[in-house]
Length: 136
Image 1 (cartoon, rainbow, N blue to C red):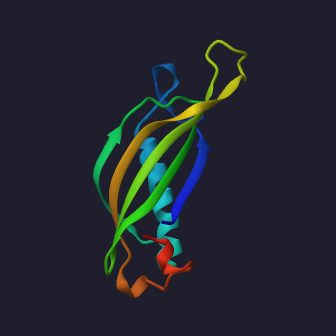
Image 2 (spheres, one colour):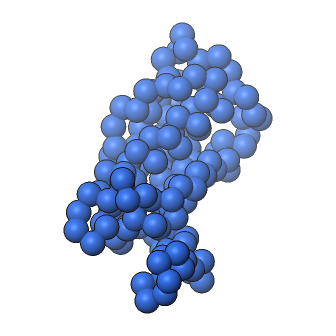
Image 3 (tube, rainbow, N blue to C red):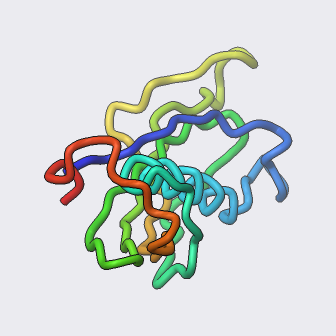
């Protein structure tokens, strides 16, 4: 199964609430970018995000955290593509260390997950850029 992953550090700009807490919607931005890459690989087109079927925010994300957002197809129809997404915190600042101290987490923390459906209209599909069997 082909998975797409992006890793991004949450910045002070991403912090929306007190204590440097990042708005959960930022994880949805990352899931959208992952979905776009999956669609480009599958259809050679960015497609359109139609809906999230569910979204779970499971742990807080703060400025300075490194997040890995991962996504994969769970179903491919004629024009619809269902995907699962997960966001994992993999690095975080050290609370009682120097201002620049960070640590790689021994166990990544699942901070969000979602299921969504994207659509690539038939007339926009230009063919897969990697072998079809890698997608499911």
